Length: 33
Image (cartoon, rainbow, N blue to C red; front, side, top):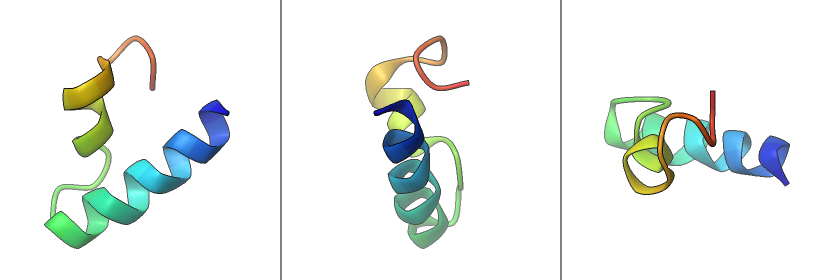
């Protein structure tokens, strides 16, 4: 599950131009690190 979240985090974050931050803002840094 975490691997999938990281994948989507990079995909969506990359589209927004700030990779690796999108899901961190939603779910918290300690969930995806």
